[in-house]
Length: 78
Ligand code: SF4
Image (cartoon, rainbow, N blue to C red; front, top):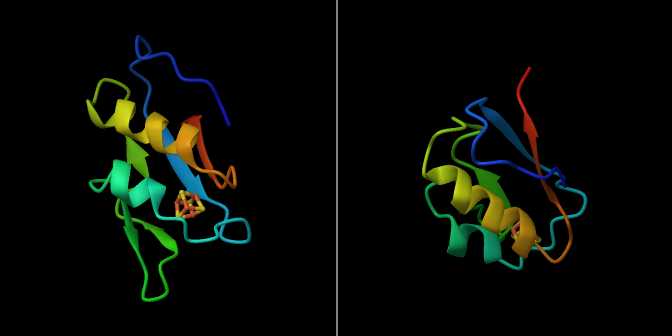
């Protein structure tokens, strides 16, 4: 997990470690604009980049923090 400063306007890249995801569903419940579920309940990304000044950044960070498997990463995009 990478800490996020909402003052930084740099875009963030979101990734899911599919080997860790256990399909708890917290991410797509908390941030349905970013995550969805596949046919088996595992998480898939609807978007993989969030602008640093987007309100979605807060939702993305909430999902990162809520994932019990630590399967979601968010990093500043180079
Ligand atoms: S919260 Fe984590 S473990 Fe649960 S579906 Fe989302 S990525 Fe997978």
